[in-house]
Image (cartoon, rainbow over all chains, first blue to last red; front, side, top):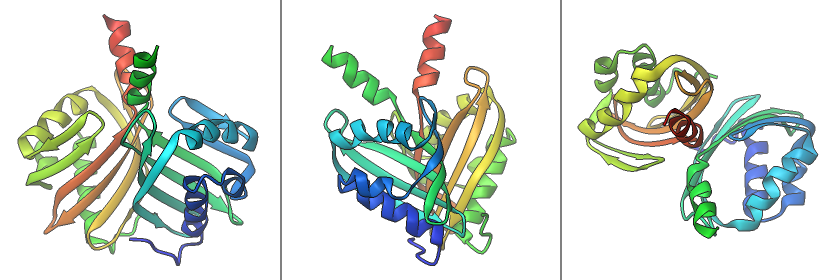
Length: 123
Length: 123
């Protein structure tokens, strides 16, 4: 399932293992300065915006399990489940475009509904 | 990006092209009778439940674009964007386990939030 002959996947997995290990600095070393990320809430542009998106998530992350990982020269897809403080199972998929060892574009897919429900319940 | 040497991916793509072409009967021919699908709203068990989940979505579907597709002998991941009547861009990822040309397990990931917002706006 994990095709390590794919340079794009090597980068995507290094990034995944860094942030799920709560090392956001290391994770950001795989993110291009001019990354564009299409996330559920809208488009993020630039590494600072991307870090601002990831940092609160890494803070509430209590576990992650890789479900699938594939890639070719320039594209990688990783699918994983996360366990967070408010939501016990929050699966996600990332489809990353990689150039020179950095993620330049990412399509980030997850369900915001359980996070919104947890937020409403906490109000 | 589309590795047609993967038997699992061939099945997942045939299924994808069928339902995005509004041919739900054809799509269901690639779904195992005892499929288990972990969808955002919870687990679906059996082809009838799965069809009940897909049918309303196929009805509101106005377009679909494949973003990425990978697979190996038993697992396929497809990432795509859909355009629907209530939500103009609703990207999704499916990670499918395939046996004998049928999808036996599927992890379905998409963001329910814009659909819930559209429903509230229509009330």
